Image 1 (tube, rainbow, N blue to C red):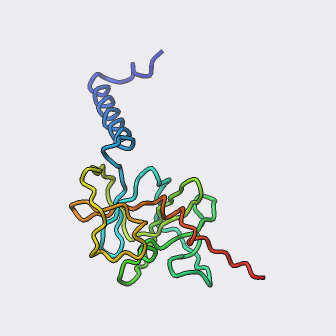
Image 2 (cartoon, one colour):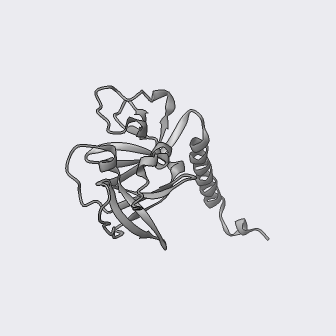
Image 3 (cartoon, rainbow, N blue to C red):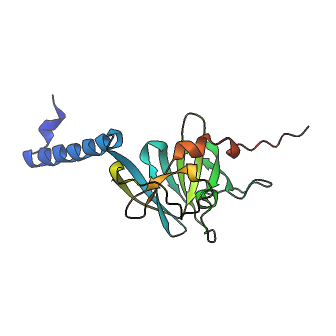
Length: 177
């Protein structure tokens, strides 16, 4: 007995079309010619975070400040039962301007670390052509250029999340002798 017998031919056609579109997005994530990204806003600039590094996005989660940490550490947050560090992504990248009271958290991870990036706004999911990726221009005075993979013609900057999460300088060790 098939569940499809409950649907009309029109409904089945609609479901097949949706499945094809969804499969297309999944192919873009693994296609060597494109990178599927989540666009985020940091101090009125647009950055792209590869979707493969993101677990989920949360809104309105309280961030608890932690004393005696670098300025890029916004604090800690309880995300789905896990206490993880929250990094102010704009501060970490050294983007000039004042910090906003952003409360959108993007949980990112690699094999070594899991963090939440605090961002001002979340935009669309976009498949960006890697052929259009240009090196970081010298005029861009990035605090950590290794955190940036390049720029697209529309001004969007692609983040290298693995470089961020693998950076040993992010490890805070307060051990005293």
